[in-house]
Length: 340
Image (cartoon, rainbow, N blue to C red):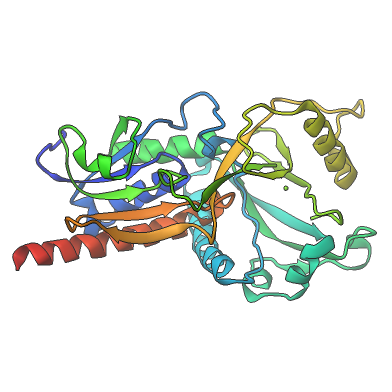
């Protein structure tokens, strides 16, 4: 039963950050006493759409050496997320999470970041440098670690289902601002969580059309999908490219680079069985994601969590935990002020 007079926390966005945050809020006792509603214009059950980047994501774990404040924070979120995914994979195999070996081959300008052997990278589970015959000719740095990959459609379906079974509400609605979520018809919204991706006109936000360090600065990655979901072959990184249409020339280039790196990807005829082209727009932000509480002039709070770029899945639960903590602190502060 929907309790319309009950205080509500509105979560904007049904991408992996919005879903994870909403589920964290509804499962923790400090916030589960509130009605939680997800407000979004796209959900994981909709047909593929470049605007909704979650189901177009590579959706895998890849540690990145922490070389500045931004990557240090992302590394900390990724470590907590890794632990949560291990737990989920063991408890619910049907969620579409599979652990496997991850391998990095790095050359070019990025090599120095890896050879610096930053703790967050070398402390990854199963980390080991590859040398000798394990290291391909021409590659300057090579390492392996324990990784995971996710089928994003299956995984997000399970998150949404779990959220609904615990009493969460969903509302399909296009908002023009985060503040608009305080005025949801029939809901007593006390706090808003903004997981909108781009942040409603934030001038620091920008789009990366992802595709993935070779000597020339380009990337090649191969990510097998769980549950017989095929293999993602990438990649490119095209900043501020809003084109929703896949390029056949880029596809051919990516496939050829993928086959050179891992010849086992070609079929028995030496070609490729292409299932579909995937174009994903990753909502990034200058200086890193926005993860903070904004207090409005009327003392209401918005918890912002957007602009993570291409690391949404691998940082999702760490970010969701921080969102839940900030929501709890904001609601407690609000209650205290109302008593004064």
